Image (cartoon, rainbow, N blue to C red; front, side, top):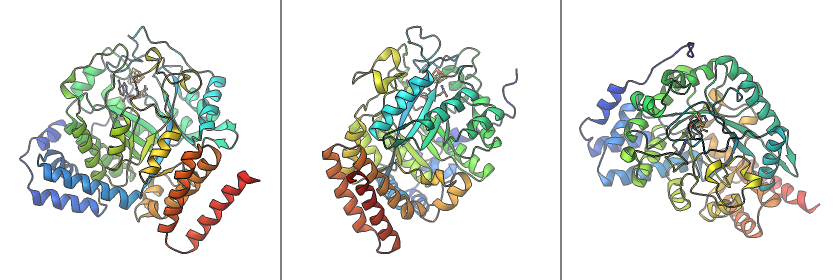
Length: 464
Ligand code: SAM
Ligand code: SF4
């Protein structure tokens, strides 16, 4: 069966390896590239390669500083929060790194029933979550109809003041018809991680004649999504499988390819690092160190100024705190990745039921409190998506600084909702102070007055 309707290989490995092996760029060249990025212009693959190649510690620091600056200029101090919801871990593939692989006979296989999904969503809503990413193994039972029904089910759950306002998807690539069905259910971003863009490594990591083993079908997965009308997509690399420098360049190449081909870049990039997982043994040759990981995030920030960067709870709290400043725009919080984990697992992580182990299992409230103490404004805002500002439209709005001007007030309103409806007294105190500080920073005018009025209305809602 030809799985690939139109397999496009836009990754030229020789070219990318050639860029990695060129001579060291000069200080002046790096500074010129950094200046371009600070002007919010996306970098070419060649320019990104120069940032990747430089070994000068002084320039690394300058890249970090620029990434912090760019994040502040484009996104302000907002951080978007979400939680993963694992729907089912049946899987026909045998990805060497994942505990859900079919050869892991110790894995407890389970697919949540519609009622169980409702219970999980209720628990998430009761903690204050508004955005979820649904995660699926790859199996014929998780087809487009199943995914669409699950999305509708999630949106239908209302608990107290709770509602899920945005449902993103992390699932296997579909065919065009499948994507059309899933789009109709009202999804946010459709994420497909390429895992590794290096063809030989990809083949090694996905052994057997598996669906996922077809490199080009996966690489082409987001082209089919665009063909089906989905213009909100996410890319990702699983760092630790191959040379991080190659992966960064390939992911940037993929992002630029989408931008050139469809006039819309990816909404988000993800950069998970390998974590211990049941039944999995790693070859450590390409493990990414913390220092390299910092560089990866900072360089991605500079390369694609308007693309969201997602940092997950695979990283520990201390490192997350540091990495956040290099340009991350979204994190998960209060995450449980064992099936049914939001109501069943308590605080312990259950290896047999997890895809891999998490390094940050703090509650949403704890994460919120720390973020706000560090001066970030956690946001549950979904208004762009709700008003149709995605894809090409989203890019138009985001380019002239829209995010900072409009997203900050929206972030404050959704934060106030969280504080009033869900937070602990301590977190509320920290949050109210932060909101006051943010209001003080806003320019006087209609926008500020409207925000103050709406904040008051949210507070009154609970007094009545
Ligand atoms: N099954 C679908 C697929 O493979 O595309 C959906 C995504 S899978 C459940 C979610 C992601 O988890 C994978 O794309 C992979 O990048 C990541 N992952 C798998 N094993 C991991 C591990 N041991 N450590 C960290 N991340 C891992
Ligand atoms: Fe299955 Fe996805 Fe895990 Fe691969 S990464 S084994 S496809 S769940």
